[in-house]
Structure formats: structure tokens, C-alpha cells
Length: 462
Image (cartoon, rainbow, N blue to C red; front, side):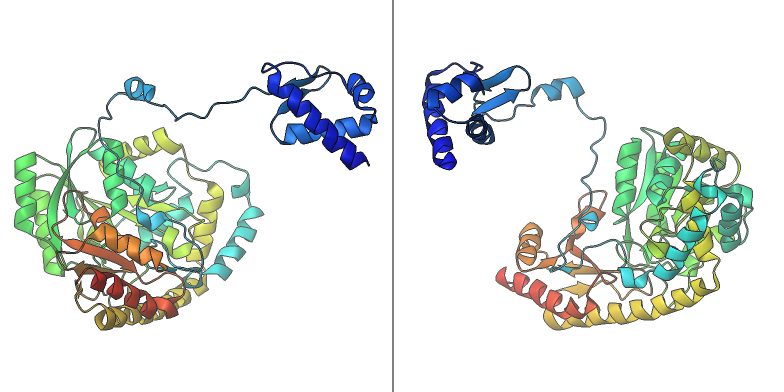
């Protein structure tokens, strides 16, 4: 009976509310008990039902009131345009490479290695040990833990621990280097295509990007020289080993030519050695190892090879360049978590670290070859821009008539997420590309992914 009584009260109050003004106070519980000959519990149940329906709102100790009806209207944030003004530099959108996707799709877009390619056992043990140490509760030096500085320096060779500045990931390192060495409004030469994060960091630092074309074997030194001469730039950002996205690796003689151009113009080469731990058919020899005059500013990250949860990178720079980069870093993040630094150092100094890297090399080779073979079979209209000797990606040239936006949509609708190549160019792309990552999850699905890409292109008549 109480349910019937409650419904009867709800119906009656709805009629009363329909003629009442917004904010009007409902009769008290005592008055409703008397009016409807119901118990206080039944009245309260009716009021809760009305509140759940959004018709009334209760104010404890005051009463129950008719809720004001909010009229639906379009969001209007136009006033912010005048308040914020025109942005001094347009910041690129966050790359597709950072998208998180459901487990049931074929993820060829990711910028990070799959969990099975990480030293998980070493990382977990390192976190347990670091949590018991002083790094869990103390502030580290601004430039980094001395032991980690020494490790980065020893890995490069001709460097001193005091040359190293530790950062919370390579993105922070790039931002600090661009701010400290280039500065807002000044030109920065970039390879084209290049790492999307460098394009983003340049935009955020307000530097003026000067692209130079870079192919499967690196940039043309004459084009680089011309860019320096025409713009007066004093810095060149590049990835000489297994470049992201192209996988290009500079020949040794090209590296010497580039260093010669940089020295001639009294400039810096900001060398991003992001894939140092991902060599497949070749080992990495950084250009910084050949520099003894401070022209090369060297960046190496451990985030991808150790764990995405351990965002730690190191920059090696000498002289005033190092001081400016350190000052820029302190202005942004003060210091890097000592706990994460301790974890990173623990992992890379364990005997199992080198064993792990040898296993990763074999796994990456198998994954690369599987995806490349599937593309040759199922996407005959595409062209691989060389088979990379290291890194995590294949760079695929598509027919010029391809509609890249439609291709991405059609692939995703069929369960495959790909990374459009246009995101990797600091200026207009000269063609249509895809960057396909072969280090992601479920490599057994790579042939299906390639087949779906081929079918999507076929629907465009390609």
C-alpha cells in the first residue's frame, strides 16, 4: 500500500509543482501527511522520488523547493577569444601516437613499446629497493643524482658527470634546450619529417622552425648549410640514428659533413638519441662521441626502454650551453623525482639489463619483418621508405591520390588505428605517409592490420 500511496503523493505534488513558481517551497512533511493521510515515511519516499527526477531540491533544515528548470542552450565561450587574444605561436595538436585505444583494436599507431618488450621484473625490483632508500623522501640535486649523471656520461664516452643534466623525460629536455639555446622568435633548423614532440616543443618555446628535407639516409649537408646562411640559425635538431618517424640512420661520412657545417656556422647540433637501446641490425654511435668542442648537445631518454612510468632522460652539454639548459630546466620543474632517478639507475646497472636488450633486439627484428612482409603482401600500392636497422617504426609512402583523413577513418572503423604521416612534418608534407609502429601489442594481428589498410586503400581506387 505504501508504494501506491507514494505514487499518489508524487502525482499530486507534480500537479501542484506545475503551477508553482521556480523556488517555491513545498508544504511541510507534516502538512503532506495530513493532506494525503499517509505516514511520514511514505511522504519522504515521494519527496526522494521527485528529487531523483530533478523536479525538487531539498535543503536540510529549511525545506523542499521547486527546482528551477534550466533551459537548454548552446555553450558560448566566445568571450574567451578577446580575453586570450591571438596565440603568438600555434601549438600543434597532441599526436595520434599518444592515443589510448581499446584492447580489441590493432594498434599500429603507438609511440611506446608493448609491455612484453620492457624489463618488467627489473623495474618492479628497482621500485621496491628505491622505496626503502633515501631517494623516496629526499630532494635530489637540481642537475640529477651524481650516480645517474656518471652513468649517462660513461655511456657516451667523452663526457664528464658534471656535463649531465637529468630531466623528467625527453620532452622536457627538448623544451629546455630550445628555450635555453635558441629562444623565442629565433630560428631553429629541423629535419623534415621529424619527431612530432620536437615540433610541439618548438611551438611551445616560441622558436621559429626552419625545415630542411631529410630522406632515408639523412639530410643534404648543402641544404643544411643554406638554411644556416639564409636564417642565421644557431641550432639544428636531428636524430642521426633510427630517426622517428622514418627510421633513417645517417652514414658515418654524412655525420662528419653535418658536424663540419655546424662548426662552420658556430652552431649547435641537438642530437636526439631516442632509439639508443633499440638497435636491430646496427649499433648506435652518437655524433656527440666525436665532438670535443661543445657543438653537440646530446639527449638520451630511458622512458621507452625502461618503462613509461620512469620518465627520466639526460642531456649532455658543455660550457655555457649546459648552464643555460640547466637554468631553463629549473624554471620549469626544479628537479626530477629522486625516486624515479634511483629506479632508472638501478635498472640500467643490473646484469640483466644487457641480457634484456639483446632479447628486445631479436623481438623487434621479428616484429619489423612480420609487419613489413604483411605490407608488401596486402598493400602493394604502398612503398616502404627503407627497412630500418633499428627503432620502432616503419615509414610508408602511399599513392599521392590517397585521402589520408578518409583512410584513417576507414581503418579505425575496421578496427585498426594508424598514425597519419602529416603529423611528423614541420611544414606541408610532400606526400602521403603512414607511420606504423611494430613494437605495439599483439604482433600476431599485424597481417590483419595490413590487410585492412590495403582494403581501405582499394576502396579509394588505389
